[in-house]
Length: 245
Ligand code: SAM
Figure 1 (cartoon, helix red, strand yellow):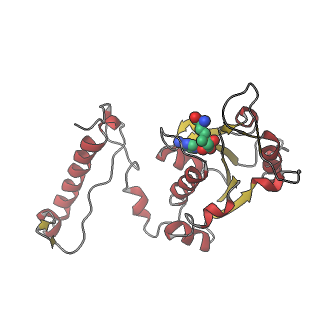
Figure 2 (tube, rainbow, N blue to C red):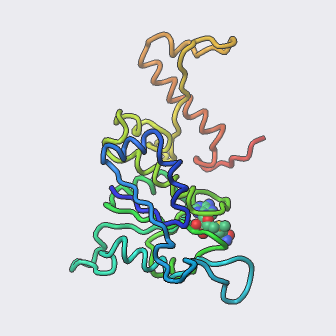
């Protein structure tokens, strides 16, 4: 699977994608991450990618032309669809605070594409014609505003990459983690608490059940703990509110 990231700050990605599972997945060739500098698709002397907003107002707006040219060059198949009219199994996503909420199911759904292009916005926003004509989806990583789409793009790449078959050493790792399964009412389940040695630290004890070796009991305890944690931290997942008292 190939991830393309379109950004005005390519060196940003030297950090976040250089560690752990994602970096190993790149080394083993299971994923490829290609970071593109949007300024490479400008023609003026100063490589300008932004301009003032029509209608006035604060801030600058990311221009449509360089983004158009970049997509045309990175994913030319989208501009010459095959006879079946598909885009060569590609997906173009704009990271945006106004987008649909990115959740585990979106991460899983992106797995179906051979190539995913993530566009990192900057400034006050991006020219709406990018949204209207060039992207398949707008995704938000949460209800807050960041200064750029680079962190959200790294979040998307990390969460999708670890679902690519073969990336996690132990297949079960991605099957038994938060948001990987639903309860009988269709609400997402969270992971259970984990402990490791020492069994006693400062008098903070590991629950006896985990030390007793009864696997059926351990399974029951973990399921109950996962539900309790969801109730405490994320009652919104089951229709409640998550305001803490
Ligand atoms: N004026 C925009 C608004 O109120 O929605 C915020 C623009 S923000 C300063 C600049 C860029 O950061 C956006 O174009 C987007 O690419 C990215 N961004 C900010 N918050 C985000 C979020 N929660 N999820 C995804 N991308 C985000």
